[in-house]
Length: 107
Image (cartoon, rainbow, N blue to C red; front, side):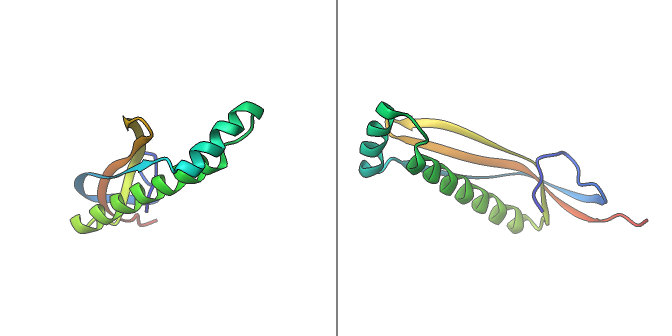
């Protein structure tokens, strides 16, 4: 379970496992960069970059979830993303949150 809130309604936190994270550094593809430069002239969405960032976010999440599973967690709460420029043409996407073990609350 992944959520960007600090609790999961209907679930009780049994154990706190700690901070988990996953990151990836992605760089621009020369073809995407040339197309983006042309697109800047006429305007519109830079679909190549949109796809690149979506892939990067998914990879960062996958790595974070793998780390959470290694701790024995079955949920990650308060999930957040962060980005930073590493160098010209390359950026890091970081996903992080709190790994916990949860169980359903009894009604």
